[in-house]
Length: 605
Image (cartoon, rainbow, N blue to C red; front, side):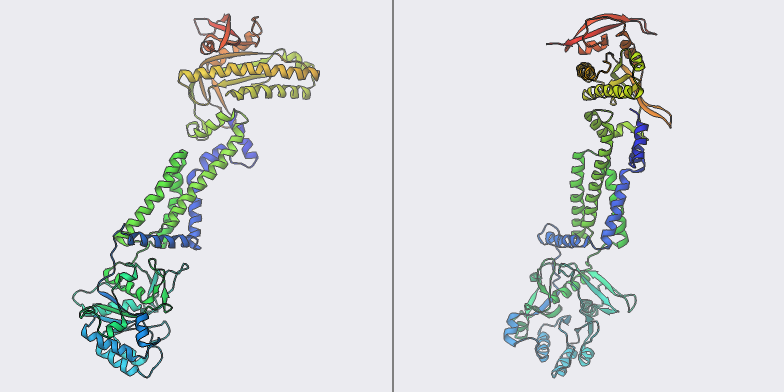
């Protein structure tokens, strides 16, 4: 097998050679390409839908009780303008003195702060009444839009103002909030400012903006379903139908929750009201549990690392190991993400890393499949398909820096050539001779390869083949099977030659006779030659013995129907299956004892 020639063949056909596959295109390069692709997908938002699904799933897992669930802070209360209140007080919007009535009712159970998630942008006849009530309370926070402020008299009376700008993601869920917009604090943040004002001895750490032009976003850590937050109907509070101290020292948010007004979605509620978003933000700030996310640069580096690392881990594994790892690593990552979410309020990406892992494994598999297809086409021209498959499966054992590692092994060597080839060649035109010879060599080679042999080389009209390479066989049964395969191949060649001669007789071309020698012994197999010419071959005394036996076919006359001579050692391996006849012995150079020779007579019945 001329591996250097195979490599040159591949290069000439614009394919990667063995060296390129093993050295210049290692698995981690495939993973690196996948990592870069994953980063591009991240930048164009292709991972977002799956990440959003992961976000929602994490909240649902926590809500089920599998992970620690902090729940809503008991210091937060919502006064809801719901269906019952609208039935009592009429269609929304209400006259502003209605809110003054609420503030008056709150004197019985004074909260720490009162935030109205209701815009008062246009003047109304009742503004003075509401402004007086706001001033008397002294703890009221009013909302504004990014461009419009509350009525001047109401703003002047209020203790604070915050923006209520919010945007839902593509799946309709609100996950983030602008904690500052052009330097204006979020409505929920303005509420926590009032908390700190009322608790100067134990203030909470608040997010801050470096300058008035900064827009800063935070990720909302929804504490739970909104129905689990303490909520009272507006009408019940005004009419005094709630416990006496229900709102004392609470952070109260007032908003409309009736269907069709200010709808948003949370990961736990398909539809809820905007006032609960600000309640969640207040909860997060009070308890320092806003969701944290990896910086974009870290996420990019993570994806760039996962690709090649996955390829390296999977590169030298078998199919079963790859499946186990491919299933195990995502489970481990999801478990780690869930623990970080449940205990430390970190939302780490799930879809992009797992997707990168899967893509890297898939790309590696496709790469190896393509690689295998190219190499199989190459190998199958020189060895049987089973050996080619074995070479692929154990390629790491064979190739070292693009060459086959030398190894000692026991194998059966076959030598065969055509009788009287020189006289035949003198009578034929060169082109006809080459066609005649190639037809013969192809027929004989097919028989050898069909029985697990490897054609080592063609020497003019002679064929040298080996049974038992390229992998070292050490067990008796393996070596025996190689010898049996060699004899079976020889008998098959004899039968195939008979068919070929019938065709040659019809074509009036010279008939062919051959002689074969087989010997089983110790060999060294490996790459032979230099950097410009490299063959995979076997060397050793066993090769010389087989060659001597083949030559003895011209001298020994026996009843053998196959012109096949084997040594006593080879016959010892096959005698249970084939009949043999001792025909002589040879004295090999460097050996004291003669080598006994047998002729194979046929298969035992």
